[in-house]
Image 1 (tube, rainbow, N blue to C red):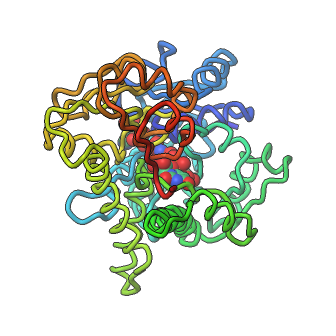
Image 2: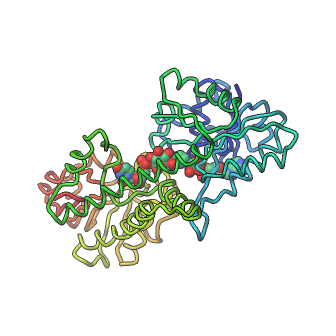
Image 3: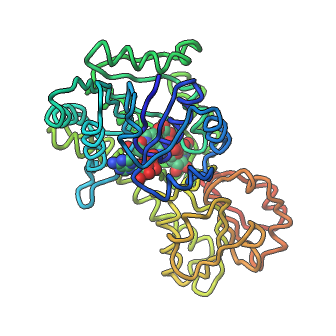
Length: 434
Ligand code: NAD
Ligand code: UGA
């Protein structure tokens, strides 16, 4: 079987490489010539653990290829996946579907034979219907079945998430679309992955409902953490005590600086807008968005307060800038709220991130990028753990303390051992713990 993947981003590249690993012939197409050039030269345009190896092996085995030419990618393809971006539309928060519609139209125009057009991008309810209208207008001569196959992978663990998902959701209207997608996912049938077969609208909504629920769950525990601080409780134990209830579940109950990333912020907003337009506002999701936005902004105040109320001329070492560990993605990272606020308050900023390629261009001017956590902490008055990369968990509090001038440690991910930090002479604080 041969497929085309339109978009070589965090989802398209990973999905394309994983489908190739399943034994499918995959051609990934992207309009970004620099991205395709890098891939053709064997360089990964993004950081995702294991991706380099997976891509290299499947290219060598002749199952995975890259191009900027959609007609070339479409040649012989039974299914064509749309994995292009759906960012927030400037001004109103609706999902911007420009890339999706352009890619759908381009694929239909270039097609030589019937195919199944599958949307993997996260798109609002009703988008499948609009795609159907576009392809029917552009190619009335060709039978193009439209389907929805939302993706649930997380950055940083994208390959295992794709290879061993909790479920696969397939929304379609024709037997042919279901049959082609079932064949494609056959390796997952063999490991008994639940497959949810449904209509296109339902599949589209499942994706937003899942992301909005997870974002709400995180926001809930963040509010519990704030309450813990006032009443003398420990959010870590609250989360464990709650999460062991099978109906609640332990995952996504880690308190922190507020969720960020390329999806939760834009997807919660897009869902809220869709629901408002439908006359059925989702108030819980609207509140989640508001509480999370306020939280990210308030984190800078928390750092200033931990440093005695004034950071003017003081040096702050910030560890981790990406929205989560094991990715280079900076989209909607809490660091984008926190760093400019600290800079405005007059702090001297030193930062270290293990994958700083995108962060460098996005930080306020004057931030010193260090080559290691200890170098960032040199002479600092305070150290802030912002993203919980594993290498920060292993830092020796004694060595950190000796490198620094001051004694403030603020752990916004509850990744460090409070006792060890206090014994090393730190004035240590974290989120929702005594
Ligand atoms: P991305 O920005 O990393 O990649 C999108 C790619 O599409 C870019 O390389 C862009 O150049 C390319 N592109 C745009 N228009 C094109 C066209 N007409 N033809 C060919 N290529 C084109 O985006 P992403 O993070 O991979 O997200 C893609 C979609 O998947 C979004 O809808 C997102 O919500 C969804 N999603 C993302 C994740 C994630 O972890 N990032 C997880 C699940 C779902
Ligand atoms: C998220 C979902 O988990 C994926 O299922 C989904 O496919 C994806 O969005 C998407 O639609 O793009 P991702 O954003 O890559 O994946 O990463 P997550 O692990 O979900 O983290 C998102 C944010 O929530 C991060 O800022 C993270 O630090 C934060 N988070 C997560 C918490 O603060 N606490 C938690 O317990 C979990």
